[in-house]
Figure (cartoon, rainbow, N blue to C red):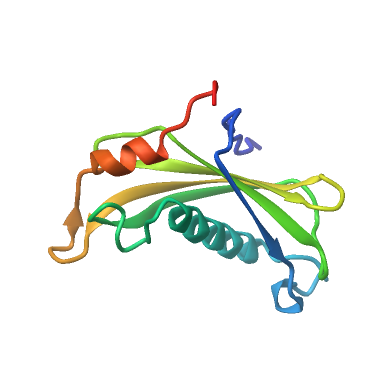
Length: 145
């Protein structure tokens, strides 16, 4: 069976920490697969905020998630704190991809890797919008940074 493989960027421009709550656990006693997507969402909101943006106002346009991929690497449990690193890449006229590396803060062990496809969206007219140059400049990073 073919597995999803993500090619993570070599440089992450942002990181944040998220503690694992008891409500993040599933019946197996570890973080549920659906919770990882919620944690990625929290990291995305914090990343945009660090740049002075929100999901509804990225230099004048909103964003919408077009797709997502998650590769689960190890378990995480109540009381763990995850470190989530975020990087933007694969820019197009209408959007970009965000990459995430989630690791256990205490052990450094990778818990998951993820990618979300982000499309700029004008919520007033409910149509795809061009990625603003201002946002592109703030989101771009290079391996030399």
